[in-house]
Image (cartoon, rainbow, N blue to C red; front, side, top):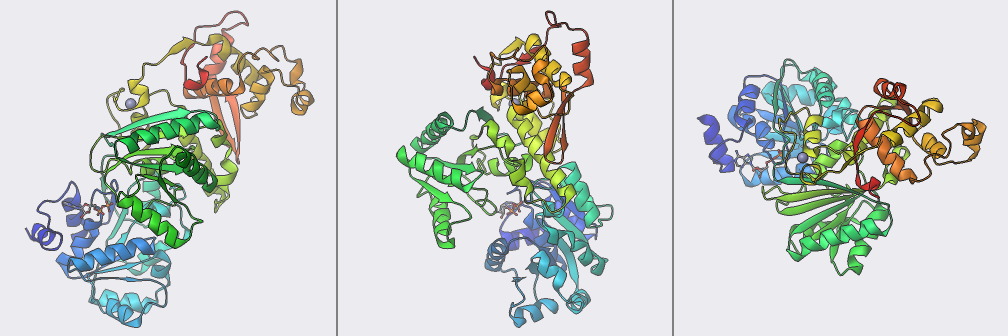
Length: 519
Ligand code: ADP
Ligand code: ZN
């Protein structure tokens, strides 16, 4: 009962949410825990309550100063003794009080945690540490969407706080990331709590188009629908330039929006943030800089303009709508050119293996775009969660009647072109060959002499690329990465298809017709 009493006393709640109680019990019994639960599900309580029960200090590592400040402020209001140790200039009273165990909860950045002198830790250990919490724990992993080097060094801290249970928390993590977290923190037989990733009230949809006006028109149309019903929308753009462009397009359409990106002055950014949170402006156009700590429950729609860099970030950003449980919509608008941004994203690569991870992430995000099956199933699969139904009724692919067509001849041409050009190029080369290109490269390799050169002129490149996506998705083509370059080759299944086919006769091959293939 002491747990419920503590929950009531400090937080005013009568019941624990799923997993909270078990996690707290495990921590109190000294067991390491890994908590993977959606934003807003109440993870913070899991490391806050143990200190209030045990009377020992909880040490919390968190990546952002602003987040720590918010948490500390709201804890203080509830009568919890909380502080954060920020930069090295933190006043010595806070430092001294922290060291002598005067606080229930002490927050710090990973840099700070690793640079505190060992005397600090031995003093605090003497008076008692109930847990070491690592918030946003996916930052530890190169496979996460927000890898931070400082997080990697937290194992040092683990070495100092030998018998202190560690609790790692994150809102998104794949199997790989989970394993990285438990390994990096040297977790010992951890208790693992994984909440469901299924957001039943969200509808997922994707639209594809050239980067020109039509897509922007669609976007403005969608946004104005939400504005008309007085509900809030976030439009996420991949670049600051796009952010400004969309902001202008909305303005021209008479829609007032807030804008938010990393190059704005702090004050203007805060002002934007505030006017959106307070419903003074219903639309926020932003880069991903508008993110962590966005606490607004009645957002009805999140639109991504441009394919995001990973499925994790997409899930997290789109998940900012519908926190209140009401029906909300997540649109992703992309164009083919989004997929040529590998260079741009790889600039942030910190190591070779990190680069590989970035490429894999991009590939998965791209895959989400070109999906013709249930998007929810894909997202849940990605996080290792199975759903039984093949039709969720809550995504464009499940609700639209799909058109399918026998594309055996086109598939035959594309597969043959990939094979004849050696299976070592990206998809552009085999498509150029089909479209009859006489570029320098094509001539250099004498691909213009191939019998199928020019046989695919009647479809534009993007049509062929969409077909290639389908052939990859259905296992006829295999895509691999070499550094940031991709190579497409014919898979075993594809070879089998080719082996029974002649130029005039192929086995039927029925594929979904995506919007890019509409004619
Ligand atoms: P997370 O860290 O998972 O994003 P938070 O810990 O910030 O989530 O909690 C989200 C909200 O849910 C907070 O307002 C918190 O006070 C509230 N909350 C947490 N646990 C409970 C509970 N047992 N009953 C009711 N509300 C809760
Ligand atoms: Zn679906």
